[in-house]
Length: 125
Image (cartoon, one colour):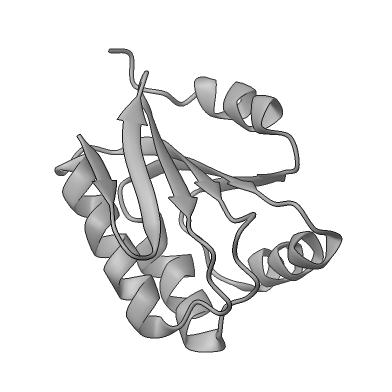
């Protein structure tokens, strides 16, 4: 099953959920709620490690960040965020230090390293 909507494309492969944002200038609360709803639908009540590709996202407002820090970690064994710019890396790092996040998270610029991290949490299929 692949979910491909206005804001993101997501699918499960080899025990990992892949979540790739489409180009978004700023994630707001409406977008955040929609993408979490779609991801939870894809997961169908089962927890997975999640690779979240943020390379096409330029930013997120505070309400969206707060929502994603809490609701965005539902049913996740671990999260690997894939970023491209130092700006995104710094903002995400700073935010994750101050937010109450309920899962293991790491930030990567290299997809292979992100997948190696998530492999230790993946569901064996």
